[in-house]
Amino acid sequence: MTDEDSLAGRLLRHPAWGGVRGRLFHKYFLLRRAMTLGVRGLIHDRADGTIFLVRHTYVGGWHLPGGGVELGQTVEEALARECREEGNIRVTGTPVLKSMHFNRAASRRDHVAFFVVEDFEQTEPKQPDREIAQARFFPLADLPPDTTSSTRQRIAEAIGGMPASPYW
Image 1 (tube, one colour):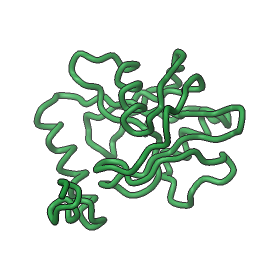
Image 2 (tube, one colour):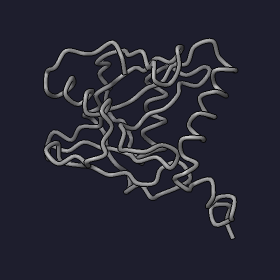
Image 3 (cartoon, one colour):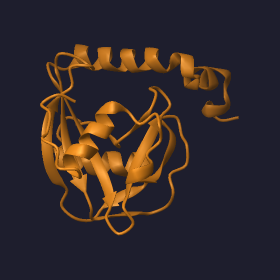
Image 4 (cartoon, one colour):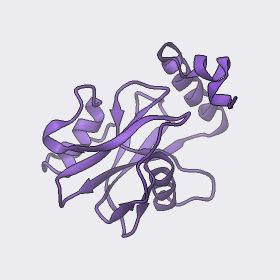
């Protein structure tokens, strides 16, 4: 039996624990760092008009892939790592930094660098794991109903030409 099959593993993945895990995760980083910096990437396949979204095990809705910048990493390195981990996506070109955002919903210290990635390859479809419940490409005109408002806003800014908000 793997850790994921254990009772504790199943309980931690239960939707009721999602919000608690997310808050604990952010509290941990607040105690460890004066400011947090994260990255998110809009993985955009221009050829077929799709974007890549992920649904986490610990927070609701569909999101752009991303996560925290680790000690000693550049934002580009963090973005490449998160794309690999969350989507089996290898960034093959230079991602374009579109904007920086203050993520006041996460904390008073959290900032997110938002990139557009159009040069990439997916090495294989992403299978669910402890962090990612689902991950796949969606047509821009047919996003899941529970795509988060911040994800929709970043798509509108990057592809729809809307002005960038300073807030995530």
